[in-house]
Image 1: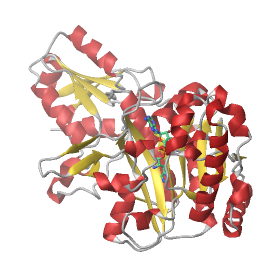
Image 2: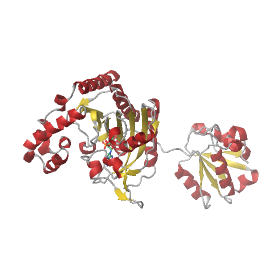
Image 3: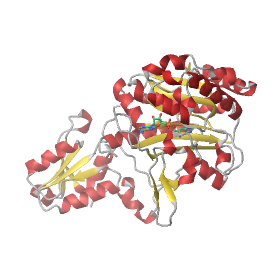
Image 4: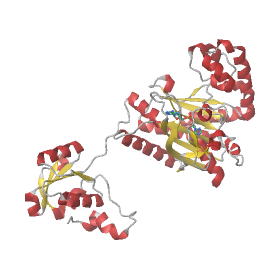
Length: 437
Ligand code: HAM
């Protein structure tokens, strides 16, 4: 498990913000499923799925219920859907932490965040196109350019079953030429062997049966409409007939986003597809569904590799230095913050020099200095710290004028529309109060 510290934490928050913007533009709303669920919820994802059979953090709680930390979010969202039966179509987004007991390495962690969407209740290829284009707009909004969309169709349930059997028989015939790991995978989940990147497996996989030969007419039509929709929107893709993905619930469209700037072992920055049978598996009515999840850690690694999405730390407006008693620093920071002007201070006193050092380190735009002189005159010294012309020269300002002086520079606009305590609005709105007392 990892700790996420500043400034990395701010970058992740900004990433989520960009994602949410794209989701809300497309009519998706947030869903927040619990971090843990009854183990059975996840087991319904599929018995042949490593994510749920081998990698879950599960335990028995004090009620003797078997619980698991979620390894992904689609299962929980589906459980919520079946439980609450919202009006269809149900279009939701989520951002949250997942847990998988994997071997940690760069880009693969036991605790990791995903951003995702699920859209339920519509059997229309245009919805597949909608969510794929949403993800690609999000990547573009970060400045990522080297992302390849890999796409495939696994067909309906029956198509997939027939194809799986064909692959199983083919691989059995070549069993002893396969890598040891793939021989073990073959027993549990033949399709997953097609995912192997091992050199020994490469040729055998290249000659394996193709799913396209097993698609029903409906599946083939659906897939063709997805591709033509992507063409129409200018979303480029690479068809990958070997793309099977690690989860068992996919039917028809499956896709993955590969960051070309990352090593191929960990370059899947997201993936998804249709899972039309999952609602029934959760005990609900037959409901079509399609969605994806993107890995926050890997997206950020891809951004680093491409040298994009460098976020600036949020700027502090004012750092208050009080060389007298600290009373003025305490009161002024409070009043600035109440007026929506970001402010911080040095605690525990200290010399002017050491307090100025703290102001420098804080990156604040202004140092606001209160010494004996300023206190006696009921004034403060305002010192611009960043060398911006617009911030003017160092000057003395009456405490009564401080808010109006600083509100010109505030990066946060203050609104009192959502003030839950109307009686406080005078102090929350600088145009109402106008003075700092
Ligand atoms: P997934 O392919 O298992 O799909 O995960 C989606 C993404 O999460 C991966 O492409 C990767 O970027 C990231 N990820 C997965 N495991 C790790 C890890 N251990 N460390 C860091 N990042 C990781 C799902 O989870 C499906 N629920 C996606 C979906 C939604 N399908 C339909 N709807």
